Length: 456
Image (cartoon, rainbow, N blue to C red; front, top):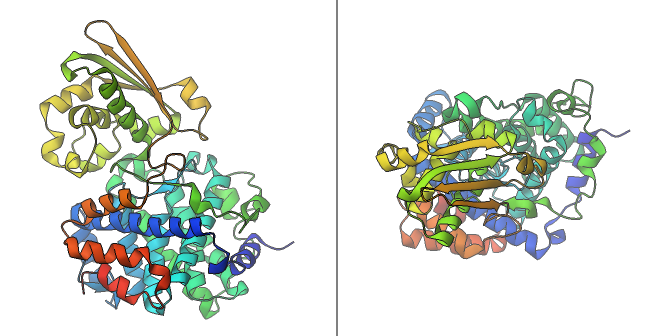
């Protein structure tokens, strides 16, 4: 029987730009715009941007690969790692609708790092990105929920495998080389959920490292280094080690018939996605009922176990990283500001007395009904008890930016402008957006990369 890596490699090689539906091509363009926005936001606002960049520059020789929003250049694999780390750093990167994986922040930096080096066309770039999402999502959906329950981070692991497929396509690996690249990634890629519990500042570096692993795996395979034949489905392979009883055949089932990039959601708030249902629900309740914050006696938020573990335990956060994973803080912020933006992660925002008082009124718990529909639906049940005795209630499952309530190009442009303000002026933003909107017409993506790197 053919190995999973071998089967994946053959399926990947059968996909060409011409086989992509127009809607899929548009989704891929939107994913680029959205992930670049997340990277630029990280370059501007993540506490460790300079530390990571300078540290890696002191260890590795520099090269000609572009860092988004920065004039500095780096070696190809390190540029992929830095851009990927920045893309995940502020919780603004996209994700799969129910598999808990952020593929774009690994796939797209790898695609651009290799695409720039290989001078690939826009069509080849879009195809490789589409395949990277597809492979990442196939592993994540089939390995969930045990992947997370065993303590492994889907974005680092499944995102890394998907990015390896992207790298292999851009390097024009043959089927044998692609199978080896995927297998080499399987035995090297890593990521632990502990980073979401006691190391949020390091979580994005973990995800960034998977981008570096993807690049190195593809190049090693191209050079002739073989990977284990059963790296995925073997008794000691990735599927068994990080999940249990995964049907390897299902991972390739229907490959190329429908592209799973369509199942991507967009983040409109720089916080863990598990907080978004509560943010949107609390905003809607305040708009619907018109109560004042001083009218609130208590708030309860019912959620599902993984969301409670990741976001339900932190109150009155003292760091921006903790704030991104504090459901109570997110609810308090939404009540106070009517939304949640980058400024709400600043230290002065964390210490606003009214926000802290609202935070103290929020109780998060695991709700049986909300848990029963997980992971197909990821929602929240909100109850607000007012000082006059009234109890208001609202359940939220469908979020703006999800596949069921998608945002369009113009919405993403707003996010892009807001994220890139300190790096690009309006003229640069317009030029980048125009180039991305017609990226399939580029014979060489270098001019676009030049715009993204602040070097034009």
